Image 1: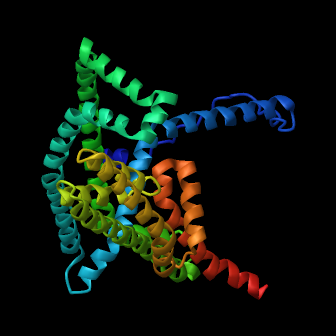
Image 2 (image 1 turned 180 degrees about the vertical axis):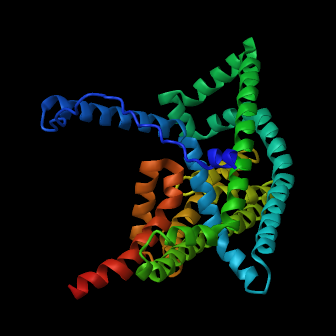
Length: 372
């Protein structure tokens, strides 16, 4: 019993002994020049470090933007399949299988003719330069500026002292590095696009929750409308690219180009690149046409330039105006500004961003201005 009482007896609490750290001084005078200079310097250093960090991972941000753009562009196709009662995961699987099948078909159709035509062009380059000198106009230009003579001299120099072999080996190493880097980037974009398009509804809902509860419904509708416009832009670009590919097939059959289907596939991919896509496509078509003959190359170049003008000034503005409700002038100006700021990625994103801005102006800004 005594033992139980001794056990149950409460222990005395230890007295808290606080360490004396001194008396708090006066608060820092924030109006002091030293304080202002210190904070300003610290802010500038933080901004510099942040900008350098962003610059070092700029390529990652570019890949993320491309993947997000592709995900929003493929979303209408996924939703179209979902409307038939298919789950979202199955719809995404169908779309990605179709994309991978197209890439395999493209490589199977395009790579062998490109290799053969490239070898033929290299072999025929000396005779092509000589044929150019037989033209009276080009020969006069050559007498004034010596362009053909310079090219022939460089070609003889490369083939005479083995410089061509060294440059080719270096070129092969460079191409190998580019292929490996491009393959890794493509796989990264493919994986990110797969994740983005699968979880796009969840991403939208997560972003909408940042808005006040009273405005979430309207913000969600505007966000889905912007995503729909991006999808419309991607669909319009694919339609325009297919138009260019069909034109190249018809042109190739008429003027007798080798492998017109393979050339059309190359032009199809080039036409998806904003602004400079048709310059690349025109270069490919003209170079391959020159392997046939100089007149055929000139005809191919002129015909492609005429088609590009018709597409840029008649077809594209009408399609963009109907699908995105963006005026043709705004489309061209947005593409130019976007390309100047962010290069190809800016040109690719400029038109959807312009469409989103116009939508926000029509639905948010203008009604408030009218009611004020």
